[in-house]
Length: 199
Ligand SMILES: Nc1nc2c(c(=O)[nH]1)N[C@H]1C(S)=C(S)[C@@H](COP(=O)(O)O)O[C@H]1N2
Ligand SMILES: [Mo]
Figure 1 (cartoon, rainbow, N blue to C red):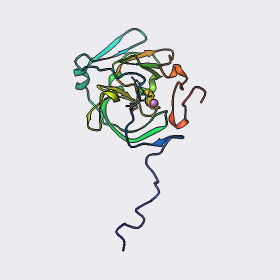
Figure 2 (cartoon, rainbow, N blue to C red):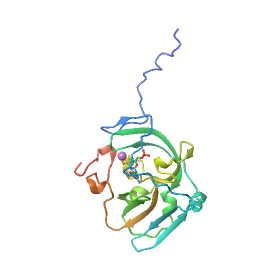
Figure 3 (cartoon, helix red, strand yellow):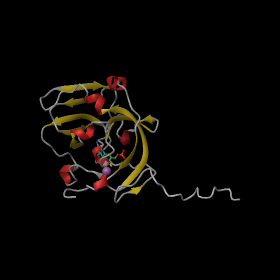
Figure 4 (cartoon, protein in one colour):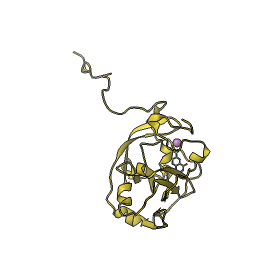
Protein backbone atom coordinates (compact mmCIF):
# COMPACT_ATOMS: atom_id res chain seq x y z
CA UNK A 1 0.00 0.00 0.00
CA UNK A 2 1.57 3.29 -1.07
CA UNK A 3 1.42 6.56 0.78
CA UNK A 4 0.08 8.29 -2.31
CA UNK A 5 -3.56 7.55 -3.00
CA UNK A 6 -3.67 5.78 -6.38
CA UNK A 7 -5.14 7.99 -9.01
CA UNK A 8 -4.64 11.17 -7.00
CA UNK A 9 -1.51 12.43 -8.75
CA UNK A 10 -1.76 13.32 -12.41
CA UNK A 11 -5.50 13.16 -12.51
CA UNK A 12 -6.56 15.02 -15.62
CA UNK A 13 -8.48 18.19 -14.90
CA UNK A 14 -12.02 17.95 -16.15
CA UNK A 15 -12.81 21.55 -15.25
CA UNK A 16 -11.05 24.58 -13.81
CA UNK A 17 -8.78 27.23 -15.21
CA UNK A 18 -7.56 27.04 -18.76
CA UNK A 19 -4.90 29.02 -20.60
CA UNK A 20 -5.88 31.21 -23.56
CA UNK A 21 -4.01 30.39 -26.80
CA UNK A 22 -0.31 31.28 -26.83
CA UNK A 23 -0.12 31.99 -23.08
CA UNK A 24 2.09 30.34 -20.41
CA UNK A 25 1.46 30.13 -16.70
CA UNK A 26 3.49 32.10 -14.16
CA UNK A 27 3.40 31.89 -10.37
CA UNK A 28 4.98 35.28 -9.64
CA UNK A 29 3.45 38.64 -10.42
CA UNK A 30 5.50 40.48 -13.07
CA UNK A 31 5.46 44.29 -13.11
CA UNK A 32 4.83 45.88 -16.52
CA UNK A 33 4.81 49.68 -16.66
CA UNK A 34 5.41 51.91 -19.67
CA UNK A 35 6.88 54.66 -17.45
CA UNK A 36 7.82 55.51 -13.89
CA UNK A 37 5.53 54.63 -11.00
CA UNK A 38 3.53 57.74 -10.02
CA UNK A 39 3.22 58.22 -6.27
CA UNK A 40 -0.36 59.23 -5.55
CA UNK A 41 -1.30 60.04 -1.95
CA UNK A 42 -4.79 58.89 -1.01
CA UNK A 43 -5.63 62.26 0.60
CA UNK A 44 -5.16 63.89 -2.82
CA UNK A 45 -6.53 60.99 -4.88
CA UNK A 46 -9.76 61.33 -6.75
CA UNK A 47 -11.63 59.29 -9.33
CA UNK A 48 -13.78 61.01 -11.96
CA UNK A 49 -16.27 59.60 -14.43
CA UNK A 50 -17.06 62.17 -17.12
CA UNK A 51 -19.85 61.80 -19.63
CA UNK A 52 -20.23 62.76 -23.28
CA UNK A 53 -22.52 65.58 -22.10
CA UNK A 54 -19.78 67.02 -19.87
CA UNK A 55 -21.20 65.86 -16.54
CA UNK A 56 -18.65 64.78 -13.92
CA UNK A 57 -19.08 62.27 -11.09
CA UNK A 58 -16.27 62.41 -8.48
CA UNK A 59 -15.16 60.21 -5.61
CA UNK A 60 -12.54 61.02 -3.01
CA UNK A 61 -10.55 58.14 -1.48
CA UNK A 62 -12.80 58.24 1.61
CA UNK A 63 -15.89 58.12 -0.59
CA UNK A 64 -14.52 55.14 -2.53
CA UNK A 65 -13.73 53.31 0.72
CA UNK A 66 -17.29 53.92 1.93
CA UNK A 67 -18.81 52.11 -1.05
CA UNK A 68 -19.65 48.40 -0.91
CA UNK A 69 -16.72 46.35 -2.18
CA UNK A 70 -16.34 42.92 -3.76
CA UNK A 71 -13.55 40.34 -3.60
CA UNK A 72 -13.12 38.89 -7.09
CA UNK A 73 -10.65 36.04 -7.65
CA UNK A 74 -9.75 36.03 -11.34
CA UNK A 75 -7.24 34.81 -13.92
CA UNK A 76 -5.20 37.53 -15.66
CA UNK A 77 -3.55 37.41 -19.10
CA UNK A 78 -0.81 39.77 -20.29
CA UNK A 79 -0.25 40.25 -24.02
CA UNK A 80 3.47 39.47 -23.43
CA UNK A 81 2.13 35.92 -22.90
CA UNK A 82 2.18 35.36 -19.14
CA UNK A 83 -1.02 34.38 -17.41
CA UNK A 84 -1.61 34.10 -13.69
CA UNK A 85 -4.44 32.06 -12.21
CA UNK A 86 -6.50 32.86 -9.14
CA UNK A 87 -5.46 36.44 -8.34
CA UNK A 88 -7.43 37.74 -5.33
CA UNK A 89 -8.51 41.37 -5.26
CA UNK A 90 -10.77 43.74 -3.37
CA UNK A 91 -12.43 46.67 -5.07
CA UNK A 92 -15.58 48.52 -6.02
CA UNK A 93 -17.53 47.22 -9.00
CA UNK A 94 -17.95 49.61 -11.92
CA UNK A 95 -21.65 48.70 -11.72
CA UNK A 96 -21.72 50.46 -8.35
CA UNK A 97 -19.85 53.52 -9.63
CA UNK A 98 -21.94 53.74 -12.81
CA UNK A 99 -25.31 53.22 -11.11
CA UNK A 100 -26.23 56.93 -11.00
CA UNK A 101 -24.35 58.00 -14.13
CA UNK A 102 -26.56 59.30 -16.90
CA UNK A 103 -24.97 58.48 -20.26
CA UNK A 104 -25.70 57.40 -23.82
CA UNK A 105 -22.04 56.52 -24.44
CA UNK A 106 -20.91 53.19 -25.89
CA UNK A 107 -17.17 53.65 -25.29
CA UNK A 108 -14.80 54.40 -22.44
CA UNK A 109 -11.32 55.90 -22.39
CA UNK A 110 -9.61 55.15 -19.08
CA UNK A 111 -7.08 57.69 -17.75
CA UNK A 112 -4.30 57.08 -15.25
CA UNK A 113 -2.16 59.28 -13.03
CA UNK A 114 1.05 59.51 -15.06
CA UNK A 115 -0.77 59.84 -18.40
CA UNK A 116 -1.43 56.23 -19.46
CA UNK A 117 -4.73 55.63 -21.27
CA UNK A 118 -6.61 52.60 -22.56
CA UNK A 119 -9.97 52.21 -24.30
CA UNK A 120 -12.74 49.63 -24.21
CA UNK A 121 -16.46 49.38 -24.87
CA UNK A 122 -18.50 50.63 -21.92
CA UNK A 123 -20.40 47.34 -21.75
CA UNK A 124 -17.14 45.55 -20.90
CA UNK A 125 -16.94 47.61 -17.71
CA UNK A 126 -20.45 46.58 -16.59
CA UNK A 127 -22.30 43.46 -15.42
CA UNK A 128 -19.73 42.24 -12.91
CA UNK A 129 -16.78 42.40 -15.30
CA UNK A 130 -14.69 45.29 -13.91
CA UNK A 131 -13.61 46.83 -10.61
CA UNK A 132 -11.62 49.72 -9.20
CA UNK A 133 -9.31 47.50 -7.15
CA UNK A 134 -7.37 48.75 -4.12
CA UNK A 135 -6.29 45.55 -2.38
CA UNK A 136 -4.44 42.52 -3.74
CA UNK A 137 -3.75 39.25 -1.95
CA UNK A 138 -4.89 40.61 1.40
CA UNK A 139 -2.81 43.80 1.39
CA UNK A 140 -3.11 47.35 0.09
CA UNK A 141 -2.33 47.37 -3.62
CA UNK A 142 1.42 48.01 -4.06
CA UNK A 143 2.43 51.14 -6.02
CA UNK A 144 4.21 49.11 -8.73
CA UNK A 145 0.97 47.15 -9.33
CA UNK A 146 -1.10 50.33 -9.59
CA UNK A 147 -1.75 51.38 -6.01
CA UNK A 148 -3.55 53.11 -4.54
CA UNK A 149 -6.12 51.87 -7.07
CA UNK A 150 -6.25 50.33 -10.52
CA UNK A 151 -8.85 49.22 -12.98
CA UNK A 152 -9.29 45.43 -13.05
CA UNK A 153 -10.95 44.08 -16.18
CA UNK A 154 -9.64 40.52 -16.31
CA UNK A 155 -11.56 39.19 -19.33
CA UNK A 156 -9.42 41.40 -21.62
CA UNK A 157 -5.62 41.43 -21.96
CA UNK A 158 -4.14 42.98 -18.83
CA UNK A 159 -2.99 46.20 -20.56
CA UNK A 160 -6.67 47.25 -20.34
CA UNK A 161 -6.41 47.11 -16.52
CA UNK A 162 -5.06 50.64 -16.09
CA UNK A 163 -2.83 51.08 -13.03
CA UNK A 164 -3.06 54.31 -10.95
CA UNK A 165 -6.50 54.90 -12.41
CA UNK A 166 -7.82 58.46 -12.10
CA UNK A 167 -10.86 58.50 -14.31
CA UNK A 168 -13.04 57.16 -17.05
CA UNK A 169 -14.13 59.32 -19.95
CA UNK A 170 -17.40 58.14 -21.53
CA UNK A 171 -17.54 58.67 -25.29
CA UNK A 172 -19.99 58.27 -28.16
CA UNK A 173 -17.11 57.31 -30.49
CA UNK A 174 -14.23 54.92 -29.78
CA UNK A 175 -10.86 56.57 -29.13
CA UNK A 176 -7.65 54.52 -28.94
CA UNK A 177 -5.53 54.60 -25.79
CA UNK A 178 -1.75 54.35 -25.36
CA UNK A 179 -1.07 50.77 -26.56
CA UNK A 180 -4.04 50.76 -28.94
CA UNK A 181 -2.48 53.75 -30.76
CA UNK A 182 0.81 51.82 -30.96
CA UNK A 183 -0.60 48.88 -32.94
CA UNK A 184 -2.16 46.75 -30.23
CA UNK A 185 -5.67 45.42 -30.76
CA UNK A 186 -8.56 47.78 -30.06
CA UNK A 187 -10.49 45.16 -28.03
CA UNK A 188 -7.90 42.61 -26.82
CA UNK A 189 -9.79 39.38 -26.12
CA UNK A 190 -7.19 36.83 -24.96
CA UNK A 191 -9.42 33.86 -25.91
CA UNK A 192 -9.48 35.10 -29.54
CA UNK A 193 -5.76 36.05 -29.29
CA UNK A 194 -6.45 39.67 -30.27
CA UNK A 195 -2.92 40.94 -29.57
CA UNK A 196 -2.35 43.32 -32.48
CA UNK A 197 -4.43 45.30 -34.95
CA UNK A 198 -5.69 42.85 -37.57
CA UNK A 199 -5.66 39.79 -35.27
N1 LIG B 1 -0.99 53.24 -15.90
C1 LIG B 1 -0.57 52.10 -16.46
N2 LIG B 1 -1.35 51.02 -16.41
C2 LIG B 1 -0.95 49.85 -16.95
C3 LIG B 1 0.30 49.76 -17.60
C4 LIG B 1 1.10 50.92 -17.66
O1 LIG B 1 2.20 50.92 -18.22
N3 LIG B 1 0.64 52.07 -17.06
N4 LIG B 1 0.69 48.56 -18.17
C5 LIG B 1 -0.38 47.62 -18.53
C6 LIG B 1 0.13 46.32 -18.86
S1 LIG B 1 0.80 46.11 -20.39
C7 LIG B 1 -0.02 45.26 -18.02
S2 LIG B 1 0.39 43.68 -18.48
C8 LIG B 1 -0.49 45.44 -16.65
C9 LIG B 1 0.61 45.00 -15.72
O2 LIG B 1 0.16 45.08 -14.40
P1 LIG B 1 1.18 44.65 -13.27
O3 LIG B 1 2.41 45.49 -13.42
O4 LIG B 1 0.46 44.84 -11.99
O5 LIG B 1 1.49 43.18 -13.54
O6 LIG B 1 -0.81 46.79 -16.34
C10 LIG B 1 -1.39 47.50 -17.38
N5 LIG B 1 -1.76 48.77 -16.87
MO1 LIG C 1 0.89 43.70 -20.68
